[in-house]
Length: 478
Image (tube, rainbow, N blue to C red):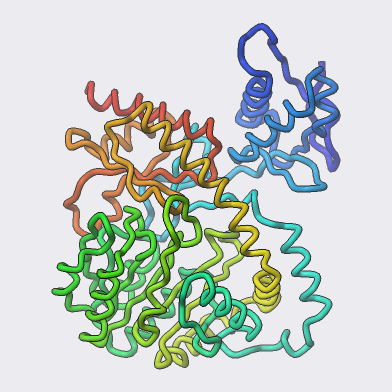
């Protein structure tokens, strides 16, 4: 009988008992055994698993069976693996204290011990980070960068990254970006904070946001800066223009390419109306290009900034495409805001890390970013399809929306189901899921659930929907 052990190298043995008469595929039995050992703490974070050939020989199965089991557990977040390295137990992610979004901007914890499955939103599969390609860019930067690039620079960021970003955005997103109007920041959170500071100092009094919209960043920052926050209702295609036309606001924050959380796409006619509104009021439109890179069933939708670079601030980030831990974001600004935003950035932190900026510039210039996105789109599409199939099979009464792009789906509840009751029942059954209600500026609106699927494997998605079906039955029976 074998035993697992933790060391700097791979374990040669791992206790897995197979029942070849059970009618359950062998790779599923192996997945279940390893998953249970991780959950019970028998396999601790960082423990190395046996190489696939070694384990296959020990269990008397083909190597392909072990590879399939390992790949599924990597997709579910239980294991980590990279080319040329050992397969290891992933580090645990601390559980959230509450299933509701906190005022500090924290998000639901991923796969915490309190949940068997967590459909938490806003997460990307960091296990797929392109380490080898990124390392090549790091090496190139360290061997070729002139010494003066490692000194203090101006608040806009290194010229190489600003040029690479503009080339990419103009080519892929249809922007009219120029390096001199681009500011590199530490993710979207810092970018929107800098913008709100600058707008408040310039005399802005009211900022409009989509209703519902993210409660993590802009809304608490605007309120802290003394700005009034106005909610503009969202319809099936994004923000409602009839409501916007009456808004007395100095700025408007939009997610026009994939509205968060409903998934609507702002039509060309509606975009033109937004621009007319901004010009009429001399207002600023802050375009959060959320989830624009991941599209599955639709043609690309260009950025609004390309229509009116004098009134639109374009906000982008590498958090959903590469990893949030990189803390890389960017703003493409109207000319009259550049100096103030760059000064605010310098005051905040003296500028983002130079090596990371130069590495990303090289990564973009080599075409590695494009290759990574092409590789990840089918991965996320398969997970989205697994979610839609499970909902269609187990919960056909829910109405999915915003499914053509992104890393999450909203499913609207039938009128007889209370959103908060469903979320609470789901938690009791080991399922983490968010409702739409906490993200509304005004409380009224239909009930809906937000399914983040980016880090979940297909079997975990199916299990999660089954748990939700049980929770909904419980709500109806109560």
